[in-house]
Length: 131
Image (cartoon, rainbow, N blue to C red; front, side):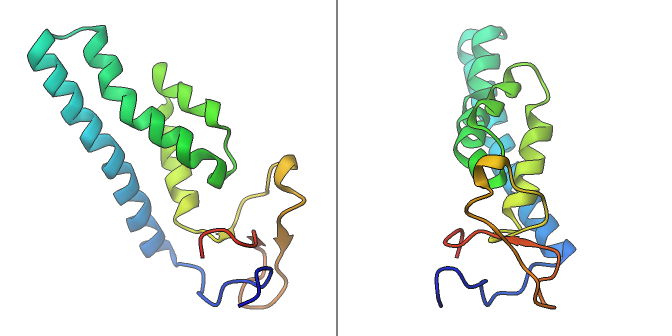
């Protein structure tokens, strides 16, 4: 397969995409809750337990964000609360790769192309991403 040709894999439907996104969110939040409870059991409830509980989600969000057209610094939203919502959007977008149903950011525009064939109409494609 040429690097600039769309993947031969068909885009996922809503149910498989939802299941993948839910598994990604659970894969991040469950370990963070466990870590928080372990720290809380050792040193008590406080800021250390709270920070320990968001360490995994912050690191994971920062790592995965560029693939979903978010900035790495958006991971800092976990410090003020809405990080779970941002991560849910990131998980939803990652479940659809290499196809994209969102407009690329300006710094990504040179790498993506608009697909016109009937099977992939209305989607963006990033060559070399998530084959």
